[in-house]
Length: 311
Image (tube, rainbow, N blue to C red; front, side, top):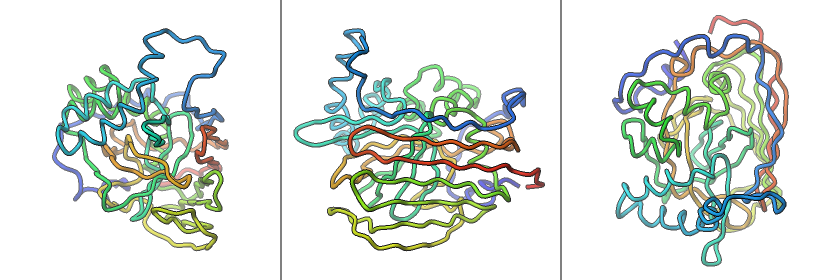
């Protein structure tokens, strides 16, 4: 039985039955290659963009602000506005009325009571603080919500009409194989490290079989700079916390304060290995990812060789 079946059944709302994906999605893949790609919040100055693209991008801050304000008034409007942010495929940042607003699409690496680590399709890692004011919504059963999650009409249609989650998984996680690795317990340790720029805070997560060991170098205050205070704790890697768990596809909208990302809205869809084509590959893979937008986190992914297992 897969990890999400063990630890996530009770939280998943009834949803449209999803078909198993052909094993061909994994044929010929011997390893997961994590790539080092800069996650910038705006196009490079030397890159020419169509006028329509530039217009959408310049209004991103206003759109994110409206999404957060509309959530309590008109969820349909908030869904529609998020679905229109097609340029924000990974992590993106914009300014509005003197505030820094942020959005990220990706797959959940770890969810705890205090924070969420999300990895985007370009392997960039970001740590988002959670609070009692964070709105978290499972959108697996809604077309509008899935469209907001993926910002893709095609991926949404396939997810809702036939249960095919491969297109959505590829858009948010990078590939079904990356998602399968997140969902499958392995005897070899899988480690990610997120350093929050301009602070003393580094969070390292090591997952071995079903246990996540989390080490952090500083505190995570909601309205102040992190202060040096090393600590370590363990939890089940697939523990459902605030409705979220490792392996969920998610989009997070929030703001930045004292260099920390604060999640205001989290939309997610749970995955199982059946959704992405089976267990992860047993090949070796190593890599790094670095986010370079102002004040963003930087992450390192280490995934050593994994021996065949009966999990």
